[in-house]
Length: 512
Image 1 (cartoon, one colour):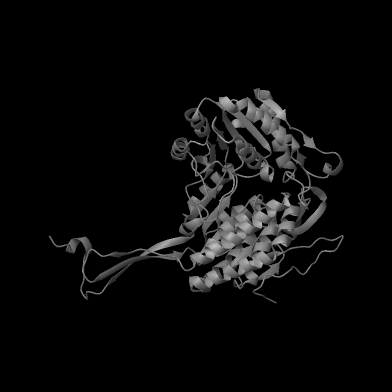
Image 2 (cartoon, helix red, strand yellow):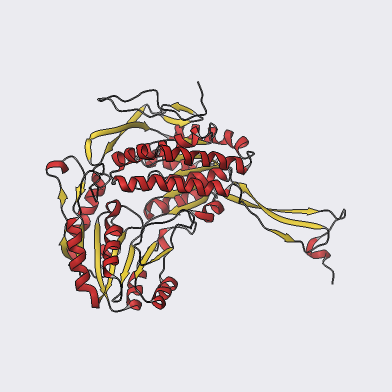
């Protein structure tokens, strides 16, 4: 029997049998066309199967797109303030369910509870913001150049939107995509990352429970080539939004261009934090630790490069490394843990590979660099917080995104030299400067090639009402968050009402 509400799957978990989640298509739980499933395991303890999900294929994408296309015919006619009320209702439900969803997220993703609570809170904040946008979809009215003629522009929805989301913010980032798309009147097909699908299900459950009708949001789980590729190629998906690696972004962007889809790409980063001689070192060290090792370094905005002026270089390294060594690594469900595991074995192996690359290039390892696999660590993907110093800006460790708890520290002569080092890479997402000199702060804001710049704060910590995204290989110019997301998920329509009761030929009829 069909339902408009996303409720728990019919196959429920027991102590020995985890929940099995089906795809959510047209308001119903349905098995994948392949008949195959995959396990969502806890990266801190791989013996813990969090849930089981459908390993879907092209036929499942087609069914979800068909459902979204049918739903669009009605959803686009629902007044935007009414759509916004449903999103507001979802925010209220997320508040009630915050602790439950945070614990689910820590189990499937690994990051510590204080961070997963923040991830859910970001979805709440995004819901409140986009609920407000339902009454603020302003368009310009402007005087016509001809008499007795009215001119304005209005926003219209695009149609079916496809979303491909990552594992590191498995509720916050889906909320950045789903919520502005919904309030603009679009319908959605979302593919969550195969490592963390449960958190996206929890977000969509809250939206459906708040009244979003059947078919408006559809979830298809599975792997990139089997699900993501059919989404980017589907002719009825008119916009595609990806958060992922730069390599995957090139593929998605090229595919989307063939059918002239709107395409938003939020990709990699190699984010610099500059520390000048006049900085508050206590604050800079705290910021560098949080920016470098928060979420186990698995953020596109992670502080993976720290550029320190020579006057405080030695002191900064000594104090930073001492603090990094004291960070407690472990299961994120333990409230005293500072840093959780890598998301999976592949990512952990990448982290360890870059340790060897850095060593081979001559960077000095000051702490960490090893896998933790004894005792409580033996069933998880744990690594020590790792710091390299005396890094040359041309080294791979200073230029390539690691996406792990590996920080490269290098010296600079002055602000101008620091900005030159910071800008000399292919990425341009986030950046940071620690200084007490307001003149230098504003010079850095002007000159750093990045979509985000922080002064006296690390490179992480975006707020939902401001644009999020970067320059160069970090993306293709679109922004998530704030009005930038509304711009991406809507089309402009210019409207002219001529009440002169005669044919006016625009510029041809302009009086001399």
